[in-house]
Amino acid sequence: MVNKKHVLLSSFLLAAFVLIIAGLYSMDFTNAEKSEAVQSWSNGFPSGPHFNLNIHGKSDAFACNPSSDGSSIFVKEYGYSEIQYIMNRKSSLSELSVIDPCAMGESDPAKIQLPSGKYQVYARVLGKPGNQKTGEERSVVFYPKIVDACNDNETAPIDGFDSFIDCSAESLMELGVVTANGAFTLDEAKLTRIAPVRGKNQAQPITDMFYWTGYACDDLYDTNNDGEITMDDLAGIDFNNDGAFNTEDLNYYLEFNCQYFDNAWVFDIADLVVYGWDYYNQGTKIVQVRFYPESTTVYS
Image: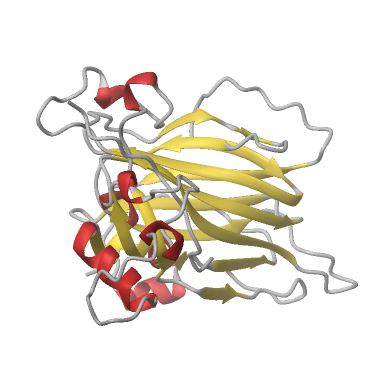
């Protein structure tokens, strides 16, 4: 029998990451070793095998082709879009795969699947500068979030689980992870480049946006099925037997029934995790993101 689980999201701290563009920059795909000192004056990327993702900002008139091809996705040049990163640790995927390249409308996220594993993640802005006369900045802000997560059945593995890219399949209705009171490691980080400033735009590390702290629980402990584990799920029971019903009982409830993750790689909290960015763009044409497998990243 499969234990019923489902992803429940409660208040977690959103992290912001800002890239502001200036100048025209070229892309460097060299794989020669670079020390951290060399990175400081080169393009800022470490060396080693990596997966590229190019995020293109497009006007509302752009007709996005939903056929996935290559390593590019398309978002609004101005305003909010959503990007989802998928990792299924039982999948045999060996290359970054763009499942849906279009994020041009409401509730229409672009979707990218990454091969299972941990990565060092870097990003930089490419393309045209901001307005040289007014000093207008081109910027983008990433707000990370957990979209969905689910587990295979350890005792009776589900046939085809390794091919799933979300938790909506009928066979997965009984699976999932509950997250409560979670927070991403990177609360806020800004990279500022004002349009009139000249010079090379370097990549910056954003790996911390992929690290998360919080509880993961079976949703049977969400007794009122509201999508969160709160005091309301405790039915007034004094779980720690201290003679009072308060938040200490909720802490006991979580610690006893759930698994706590401390600064964990977000894709480690379940067998299949969908991690997302609410992506706020202010005129940025191209953002380049690189994912370096930790086992092959070279710094010296």
